Length: 326
Image 1 (cartoon, rainbow, N blue to C red):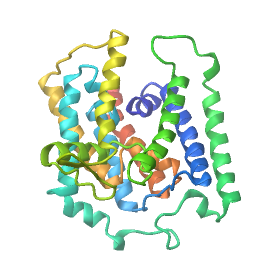
Image 2: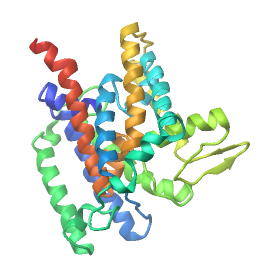
Image 3: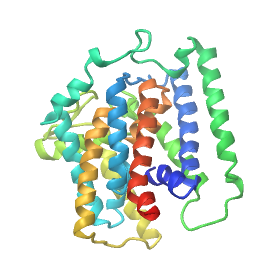
Image 4: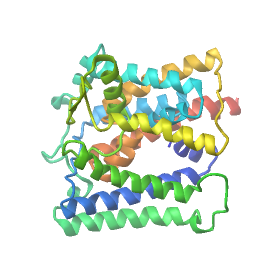
């Protein structure tokens, strides 16, 4: 998704962005169908205007410096990219310092209710509630949104994509979207009755805290005992992602250990720490907000998504576009 957002402004290439939109459309429709069937209960995030905007913007800047988003740096560890290993560590430092450390007071200040402007007394408002309530209004909004996004997707001619190594962008978008819907159900069924879906911020912190302290220290999600450890459902797919990436890289003969320069390493660590702080402040990373949170049509998630993209574009300009112009 870092590349998806970056390429739209840097190379005027919307290929990966369209793949993201395919996943988003599938998740919006699939998650809300599951909710209406009674299979899951979607819990929308609270709208914190300052936290969602500032956190999302900082995360967007950090993802460019870190050379990948929260999920991106984790799957790249499975490809042999050593800078990604340092980025994951920096990501956790940012998360831990914000949730349980020196930056916690700043987090609490920016999420103070006195600084928030809940919509009509509904801090957890969904997009359709700006118009009204009821299933008809909800699905009308979903239909209009899906139609608009699908129109843009179809302009990329997804059904005529030539064969390539690995998966094409339309297939990738479908797979990610379907897995996102499955994760909503799986997290509620196996994860303690909470449809948290996919995210990489809280789970990264939960995995590190489980390993380091024996307790995931989850503030919002159900935990369970696993021998001497108290952990969460989501901590396990933080382990699964690099394993899947490793299998894919080996199958495509793309696995290779790559050592970064000292300058690159410093930039990556600074960017990943910014990502950790920004993601906690914004209520999630690009996956947790721009896919999972957006699927609930939470106002807070939509604002955070826009802020993440804005931050990404800002740093792309200063890191890539401006030096070329100069």
